[in-house]
Length: 108
Image 1 (spheres, rainbow, N blue to C red):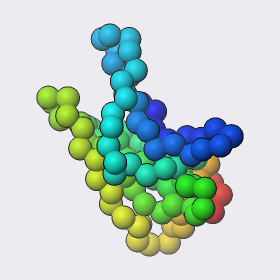
Image 2 (cartoon, one colour):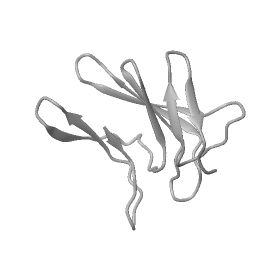
Image 3 (cartoon, helix red, strand yellow):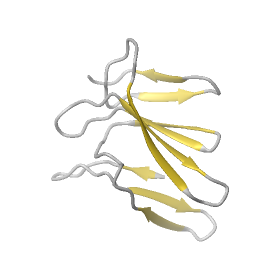
Image 4 (cartoon, rainbow, N blue to C red):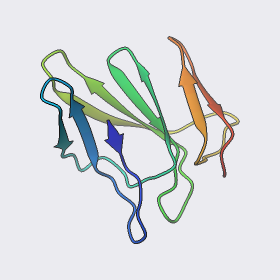
């Protein structure tokens, strides 16, 4: 999976999913994905969570969740700003277990 990123002129909001059976990258189209780069991603069960990043104007403090169904459908939701002590950040790392997402480092 590849989501967001940037080049010299633009910050992207596109999402590509790799199909290992066909060896092909497929682009998923959804208007709810935000432009961002430098974000982190963690996978938990049938979900992928994206945290933070930068959109070219501000450091982001939201989580976007992609949920995959057994039929191959993708649902995208935004969990909003995170509560607690963490600031928005980009160029950080993340990992998770069944109950928590861990963020380390980054630039705010």
